[in-house]
Length: 167
Image (cartoon, rainbow, N blue to C red; front, side):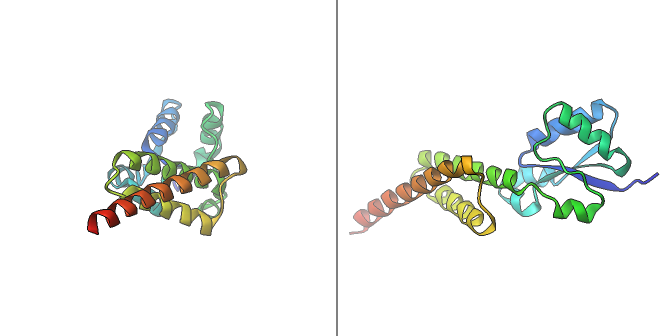
């Protein structure tokens, strides 16, 4: 019996990852989360970590994917033949959509933390990352443009206020 752990899914937040882990464990399949604690403490490093990874024993891969598909947690599942295949096989569109959602949320929250434009800069950096690594799905492009315009507007207003105060 092969005891090698294989990544079958990646998640952008620990709530979805924990839910998938609990569903599998309720069905008797041992499941493990990698990088969950780090992503929980340093959420901004989630992308650098390669998201939160759900791993199961290689012998349980097919059953685990079938279970998660049955409970509609299947948007980011991977059927790897080996660990190298799981690294190569990624659903870039869904990851890009998650990155866009993070950028949009940072831009909206940045509206309420107006004097500190750190969140707008973070949001713009995520948009630049998306620009160089691949784009979002066609139904998310309007959200990307809205996020960009919102960030530019807030940064422009902040710049005008800053220059007025300095003068």
